[in-house]
Length: 225
Image (cartoon, rainbow, N blue to C red; front, side):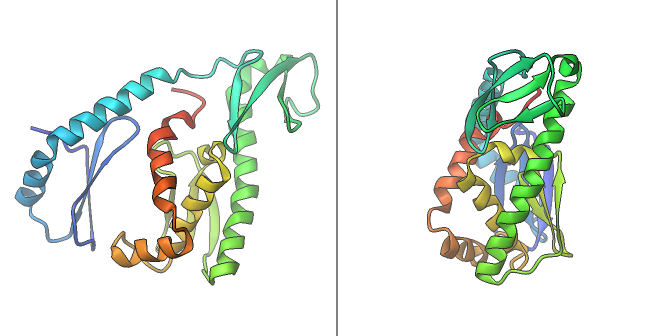
């Protein structure tokens, strides 16, 4: 029997299956769908589930935690930049557009320094891009929040707060824009019904390509295990 790690019910009309980056199975189902209907659907899809879980776990094993050593590459906006350990640097960790510079005396706290740097960059860029799309298409939202979520790129609260994980700042700009548009559309369409995807497609006709990139490469957007 396939293990369901998380079941989310909402006003959606269909059942969907999501394999998270840790290999867990998340099932999203209509409010009125019975346990038996959900279980039958999951069992029918067991071959697909096991194949996806195996792929996710294999990819996870191939991505080792960062060691924070000279020459190691770090993703930022979809590009890799090497790390240089230097005797001194003004703010412990800096980025000059070509390399990351880490002060030698700060090597023991490199992980927290990188996370802080990514969060700052994420807030700035996500704020700018969200405002851009909101102005262009007339969306309204309350505020932006940066999280440390590991398996969720973004979310939209019922009050219009848009949340994005700082890890998304490692992705290419076009992928970031997709997640932003996805959450902005949720301010109008709370679920993933046909109307939601129609609105997304109207803004981004190639959104499926961007979704595929996230599913294939999302496991790379991290610093630690």
